[in-house]
Amino acid sequence: MMAVLKTWCLLPLAALLLLSIVPTAAEVVRSMSDCAEFLLQQTPPQIPGILEEGEILDQNRYRPICQTWMNTRRFVTLYDTKNKIPVFSAYKYRGKHVEDPKEGRGKHPWKTEPQLETEDKNMRVGPLRYNHQAVDNDYNKRTAFNRGHLFPSNYGFTKDDKIATFTLTNTVPQERRFNSGSWNRMETCVKCVMDKYCINNNEILEGFLVTGAQPSTNNLLNKKVNIPSMLWSAFCCYSHSENKWLASAHWGDNNGDTNSMPTKTLAELHKKLSTGDTVFEVFPGTCPRETTVTELYPKLDKTCLCPLPISTSAPPTTTSAPLSALSTCLRSHCTSEPVFVNHFGGFEKLCLTACRSETLRSRYLIQRCCFIFSARRHNKRLYYGS
Image (cartoon, rainbow, N blue to C red; front, side, top):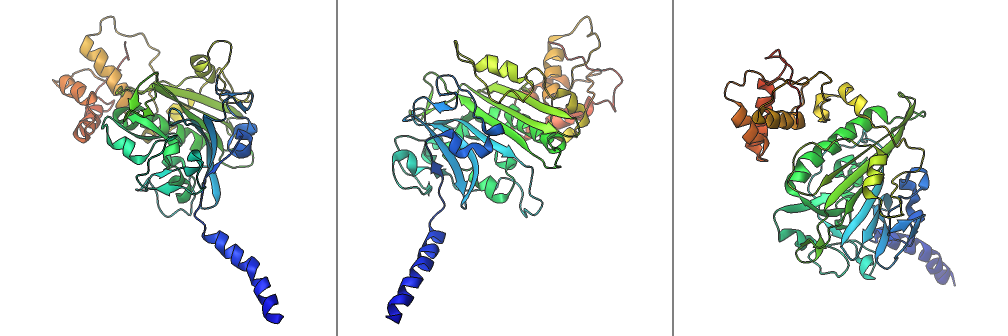
């Protein structure tokens, strides 16, 4: 009898031990409300034809995923199983954990989500073939596109937050130059804004972001995965130092254009993505819709790569085509302010060529061009013409 009791008492302990070694899983759920902690005021975006009034219109096609790693929810994704790309990922930005010993993206295996195939709940790594999602091999067929994160890895609060972003349900085929160029500079700039200004009245850094993709009509990667025509991103937070809510939006075409993406208002993003009688809305009404954070850019460090302000002075009466093209390029790439381009000294052609390339050598040359045309060397201001 005593042996039986001992065996019975050990069963709960054995069950707990078994649960502790089960592989960590993401959760494919039925409603966005099941992962509302990553949404500002627990309110999901309004996506015409997809997600309206908090309801997913086609639950067989669009699946909400509570992206979970090491038994902790990290962010939420709404996934399109037909186009095999996410509609958007939403997350709460908290800065970087001071005790995190490692920085940067690192190299992590790309994961898939078996629950989208009505299989088990455990994320998998490997060259599997699925019907409702992209797999790693899909991105090895066409070199012009890479795996573009919606929730950026370097936005993760901890190392595990960063690792959690390496799931193919959080990526879209993104043109390589767009990903490493204007999109990367936008992410860097927004991160700097949030780090400095998204500290609330409780002295907690907290910003809410939503990043999404607009699918193309019929442009496929590996004859399977939709290549989005454009990507968009928006953030909103309360700033104690500014004593107000802050918000801005960005979007860009998914092509090789490396020019800087202008900072837009939420209202402009809403207008861009609204269709017919259904209004697109990324955040609830708490967030300002008609203002941006561009007035904060001059207060940030030059390494933040935020777009330089346009001079309010009158431009020169005559502007040559090379000067106009070069001025646009330097405005996108140079981090010093102000920038000057008089007394070219024969460098304009070299610098313009470097601006239009994305090689490592060209990036080095661009920095040299920025130095050559900087305020320290010349006296006339560059007017950013058309």
